Length: 84
Image (cartoon, rainbow, N blue to C red; front, top):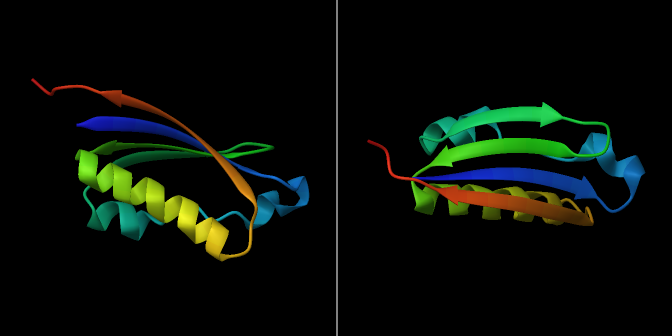
């Protein structure tokens, strides 16, 4: 299992309100635990689960925002742990 703490920042602050987060449907379909927080300058998400699914979610989040024409910075902290 891995946990990813993700902050997504728009390069242009006026674009903050148009950032797209991971949908609950996407997270539920991929069996990920999650928590959202919309800050004044960033979109923050914590996701955890199977490593392949977490990496897929991170890629999806970044590509989704870039695909909408946003210039974004994504900062991610990863932690690996064994359940038990």
